[in-house]
Structure formats: C-alpha cells, structure tokens
Amino acid sequence: MIQRPMHESQFILLVEDSEDDYEATLRAFKKANLHNPVTWCKSGQEALDFLQRASQVERPGLILLDLNMPGLDGRKTLQFIKGDSRTKRIPVIILTTSADERDVEACYQMGANTYVQKPVSFDGLIEAIKRLKEYWFEIALLPKDGAYE
Image (cartoon, rainbow, N blue to C red; front, side, top):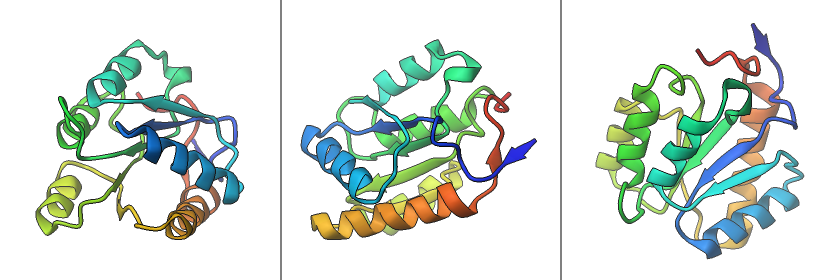
C-alpha cells in the first residue's frame, strides 16, 4: 500500500550532532510550514539504538542524516539503516556540509534516497527545506505507515 503525501503525523528523525544546526533546521521547518514532529538523535549510534527500540508503528517516515559526526558517522549509520530489513525502506536524506563527489557516490551506493548539501545561509536552508517538503511530502509516493517490513 502507498499513500500520498507523507502524513503530518509521521515524524522525521533528524540525526545531527550540532545543536546549532538542529535548531536552525527546526526554524527552517517552521518557516517552510513543515509540521511533522521531529525526533532528534545527536549521533549515529543514538539513531540506531532508537530505531532498534522503535516498534514498526513508531518508526520515522523520513530520516535526515548528517555525515560528519564523531563516533559512528553518517556513512556507517546509513550502511546499518539500509542493511537492516526492518529499516531499509525508510527514506534517508543526507543533509550535510560535504559536497565531496566521493561522499555523494558512496551514499547513493549505500542506498541514500537523496543527497543535499547544507546551504551556508539560513535563507538557503529554508529554501532547501521547502524543496524537500515539496518533493517528499507533496509529490513522492511513500510506503504506508508501518509498511517497512
């Protein structure tokens, strides 16, 4: 079963080690009228632990994943998410400062659904979030809630 668009009750898992970037992203969500609840994990390991504990109904509709984090970085986190049958169908958007072609290629090879370089300015971040919202929440067909296994 598919649904369109992603329902506002589905939450977004934001995996980001920087509190400043987390706060900026929340402000950009608000400016873009993106009302889905957000759960914040400050590391890749925290995100994986959260996903392992979550029941199928409690899994996020979308994951925004930073690459450059201490400890378990976003690359390894993506590898684990896409390698697990319980989480591999959750769309993962890489949202990072890196524009390195090797990172872009590697993330798509590991199953990332989209790769977005974080804009430098807050206005640029708002624009990027608006575009993500338009695509992922208004255009894309996504698996129905709980249809990840």
